[in-house]
Image (tube, rainbow, N blue to C red; front, side, top):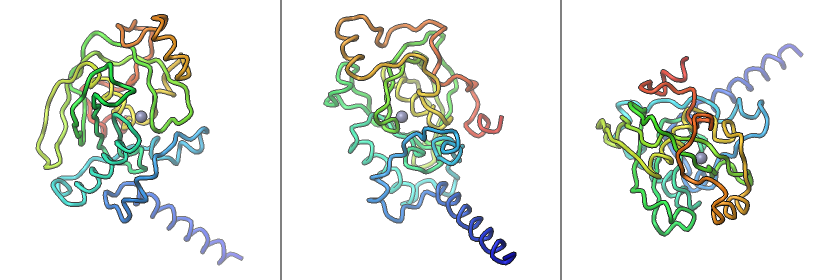
Length: 246
Ligand SMILES: [Zn+2]
């Protein structure tokens, strides 16, 4: 009996270890399989504790830049985002705890036509260095929140960032408009949690569409300080590792 317990403990810890190792690797054994797996936000606390959406993502290491493995991983992220008509995707939405996200909104995306196009940009080990004093509201939805209502939250009107590109070169830049909204939405994924953890006002897609059409609902307008901030809790200037070690 005792041996059985020892063996089963060993097997369990090995399984946990391989699961843990798996979710921080860039290597894709079967990219096609991964492309069908968008992590959905677990409903209960226990599920969240084990889900990549709620666990700290790791930095991409120097030796991992400009490798076929990194390029293949990013290509897969991008094709999943496009297949799902998303305008952004973070690595932990594919179950991988890695500090990578992509944003892109094409003008032919019917959901976001009015907001204008956002060019494709890849952010690796990103952090925010400066923000506007003004905030804007936006009704967020998410590929990981299938069937959930849209939530009204505030994001900074513009942000400045530092990150690395696929070759490992440091990039800095400034984003405003819709690009700043998507950046902060994806950055929230890497901080863990989503708009569903932050928002206090929710609407279904038809309710939202109707409200925007009639002008009754604020859409991408200046937000008051009382509207919850999507990346609240994050201190401007800190890296994701610093944020998660607090
Ligand atoms: Zn999302």
